[in-house]
Length: 370
Image 1 (tube, rainbow, N blue to C red):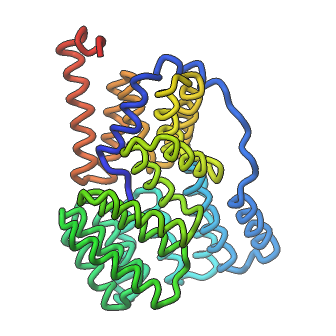
Image 2 (cartoon, rainbow, N blue to C red; image 1 turned 45 degrees about the vertical axis):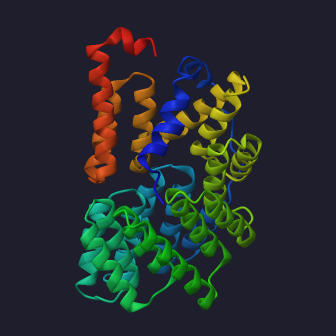
């Protein structure tokens, strides 16, 4: 699930208000990252393509490995590499529908939502019951604010096969329409479909993370807690469950538990949102230097991701720049996000940035006193 507007402003803008002075100093401190599992997977597929240069499937799988690493590291260069590998596969096997599908999924992953939808629709013209393309077309429509088209695609997808992910997509569309009861009901159906089909525990834990978030939005904090606890029983280190559980614990002032959950996330991967939440927590007990280091690490991640061509991080970087008082830069970044994702949430953030900048110009002294 995407980060909601209010969460962005709370965990990024709010925490940075207390830490922008130390941020510049801490940005100079960099630490090498340990070797990632994703690097090993990429290396395996690179070796496979070297041994089998005329195998289109080998190039397609290497492209998938690059995309998965981009998701983890935020490095947009891997998206470009993946696209190049798909071209190699296309050259060897022109017209393979799996290559078009992989291209559409790559565009979706890097937040080129309209392009992903257009490519998926191109494939659906030849194969209207392709489940993966229906999912991409629906996701692209949803992220650009076309809820009617997204719902229509998801219903077609349900006709092909009511899988866990199908019900979850329908639930997301219902949530965005404000139909939280309907969204919760569909997520329960997603879970049941997962159990019936023997889906992976990680998939069911993901559903429980999202269902917990829905329960929290419905005002049922204890129901949300129950879903998170059950999600961790399904998959003890599931990152989305840990993230939402940490947010709930912080909301309820269970600060030690919130800190422990965020540290569990960071023990498994670099995660700027977890770094920002942890920074906010430890600032409350006066650990300002460590908090500044965490904020700087998150800022570096977002800067590197966007500079390398990963448009998925335009929004949090825009909020960072806003908190630092770089209004023009913040507006430029968020305008790019709106161009890729022209929905109500992205426009609301752009409006917030513009309003904040206008208030600064109108009442500079009052703004600086905050």
